[in-house]
Image 1 (cartoon, one colour):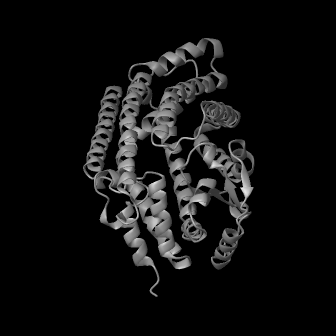
Image 2 (cartoon, rainbow, N blue to C red):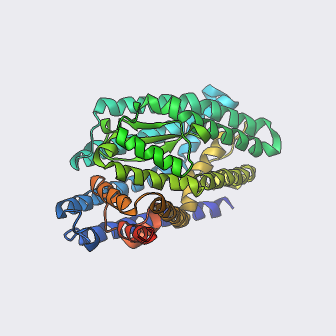
Length: 421
């Protein structure tokens, strides 16, 4: 059985890497082949120079992704079948003993290792690709400050949560996974509630929207759709990037509407209103609630699966770890599960992408009913151009990865959803 799991894991890993490389090759080839001609739908709005820039940006990110995929696969193999996790576990067993401290130490060591592996890629993406295409506004000092803040915050919040979950795994009996799920779900709900006021301000400044004309339009829109919030804020996203965005944060009546300052500066008030109408569509069509229910339900099922797998010695041995007989193996089991799960579930990515695109169409239709579809089209085109989003993605790559519909298809559907005048 252990050997069979090893073979199955290796086969799925090879399949995942092969699919990623094949899809990336398709994307780069398709985008490059269409780089010298702006699609007819956008010919009067997007310049050839901007279209070529988007093609170059897309290809550059794909090339970096190929290297990340290869390095990620090597690290994963090193930690599992090649004995890396076993070595880390053995090394920490002596100084940390056999209890929860040892379990936490093993998990923390691997998390730190993976963060250090990702760091050079994040640096290259920010200071080479983003800088090359004119998006980066972040200094190395700010980059490192963000890294330190994120690490400190992750440790301050994550270590107590991890300790509690591992304690439950060892002390709460056969139904530990139910109690662990309750703790995890509660923690996530609390973080969603506290993020706007306690966590986000550690990284950005938020100021109430001062544009009176825009504020008036937004208030009217919120009244029309019967949506309550704790205010509309502008975030200084421009200190890191010229990309623009908008989002909601918080739960219930504590929800905040947040616009990047770059978005407010670039779009006209009617266009910002249309973008907000789209985001409101996600709430009014209960997309957020549905996603949360799916995530919480799936996490409960996965914890139940983990509870069963960690009782099977072949689960450990088939992934390169010899379970300890003199101590619990909860931390190692949790790590193995989290590390290998994406390998076995990658082939299902198109299902999630398809659902997400369906919800984007529904939110667009809502926006077309509660704002002007033409204003949302105008806003989207500006955002496509400003963010160097390719207008000509490979259809198969897009179907596999993209949470949003391709630009031309999305705009066609949006205009058809507009009320007749």
